Length: 255
Image (tube, rainbow, N blue to C red; front, side):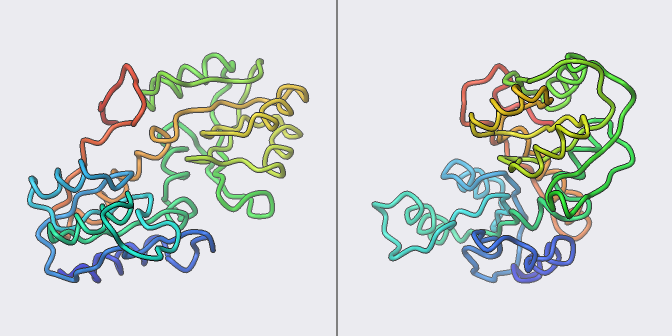
């Protein structure tokens, strides 16, 4: 199997033409060699490249693209440039699947909803094309917060609101614009996401809405499982030991 064939397999599952205009998912570094094995991770870093090399992997499939904005040049003095050079020097190709994987059927948000015990998964495109809405047996906000914390193994979970809830909308990573938040408040739906701007959190609180926030990394590390499930029957796929970059009691514990 060639690197380009790995790209095509991902493209069939999460079409790259669905990615946002600001995104740069796809082959960021493509040597198009025969694939020895794949390492999958949320982010590309020097540690992950070293881990891939040590594990005999010449392809890294990451959620976040290492080249996100156009590069005027590729030099060692630049962080992104240095990683591109390091990957090439070590014979490692880099493929990413970012917003296309967020939106895909069976992608990050669908898998998060399933992981959190959701049923009746659905999209409401006219409200938000990313969010996956799901139902569950009645829980208090404290009980749902505990479920999210224990399921995602995240000690940085916070919440807004109280009461009993039966429906949530999940957006992995930094998600939740005004229209989605407004809809969730009106329909008494809990928004589960990562970073949210302070003024939006204040609005949710002021309007008696409900939300739960988790770490960006912990909300997206389900990506490595998706790639494992997608490609493991065709090529060896190894999951990186990468953890959150922030101090956490969970360290590098995997899902």
